[in-house]
Amino acid sequence: MSTTPPAQAAPAVRQQVLVLYLATSALDSEVIGWARYDGTGRTARTTGDSEDPPYATGLDALRDGWRLIQASQLIPPYPGHEYDVSFLKHEFLFEQLVTL
Image (cartoon, rainbow, N blue to C red):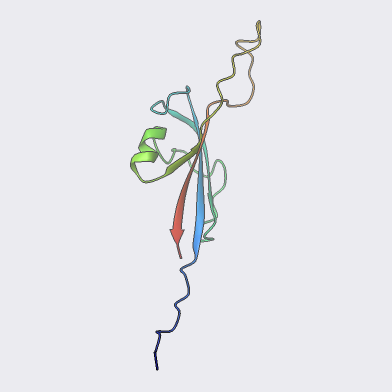
């Protein structure tokens, strides 16, 4: 007769997402805008909920364990519109997986 230990439930894993808008397309450039989303439900942050960015650069987020999952596409401005005000174009998406 064999006895097997009871199956243990896998730990619940949730995603946290960090969106950083940088001054340029370089990952080590200054953060000028940001948003955080917490899939764990532990925090309820929203865009513009603090005066200071969570990191000074995108590289700082990498050093803190965030995983880069998407970098912005480099799309040149349409001729004659180089100085138009529009969306923040240097968007980087990061994630962390958190065990509950």
